[in-house]
View 1 (cartoon, rainbow, N blue to C red):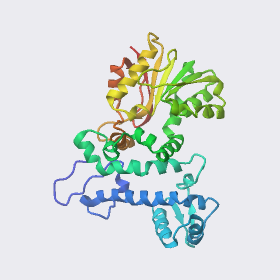
View 2: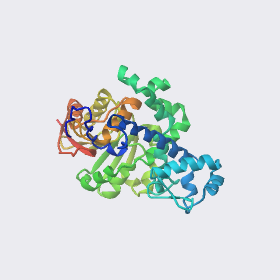
View 3: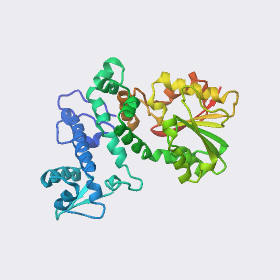
View 4: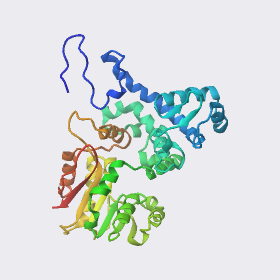
Length: 359
């Protein structure tokens, strides 16, 4: 990055990874206002998804009047919102006045293959939006803004508000990152005859590991209410005969006797103290088996000043859950304190698999 000239009319250097948001027509000191564009499109697109505009367009281009009739909306208001969404590139506004899906909106149709409708509705839900109104509270206290806004922790809130819990559950079923596919494609899970998925939710990740590696068996370990529907996941992938489902609290106990223990997209939900507690529980389960491995699948942050989407996700971890995304040094610190040493060379900047051996 070029150093900024100290003269009054110097051009501010591009912000790595973010220049696409900035309006180059504004003076450099005002270009940060471009981030407000995100707020406007997030709200407009959420409304369009809530009234099921993408569903109305699933069979082809339609006029505002046709979309309005199917979605039960006011034509003028609907047009103005869809015009904005199309201007942002998420829909296509045709010259004849009709609107159509494009590649960016095809995944917003209900039950679309590989779709993200539920993920979008969850991420833009008021329960995740309101904490951003008071991140300053987190800065001043170190406490999650979510707890301050709602008077309870996130997981307590989803239990106390079943409708929000349903949104969360649907979103987690769609929670699939391309980086996860790279983990599947590049890591040899067949090294481990018996694999435990700690905090594995409904078991989608473990089911895929078992599907790809017929010689492996698995153990799914998570809270009882979380694994209640896991059997259907394994039955749908033809792996139910090779998995054992164990309801447990990973802060107190995980099943022993496994060759590998992986924990995916879970440790980032917790601060360092609690993450270390979880890893100590796994270390206890491993015992004297020096050949066993801890496999952490999570964001691995790049270095200072480098663009990394994980650094943005970290703000959500901080303000909503009180958790954190981590650099390699940070992962090594909590794993080392729990009795593990790094055994591979993971690449930062995306979802990574960090392999640790017991020491």
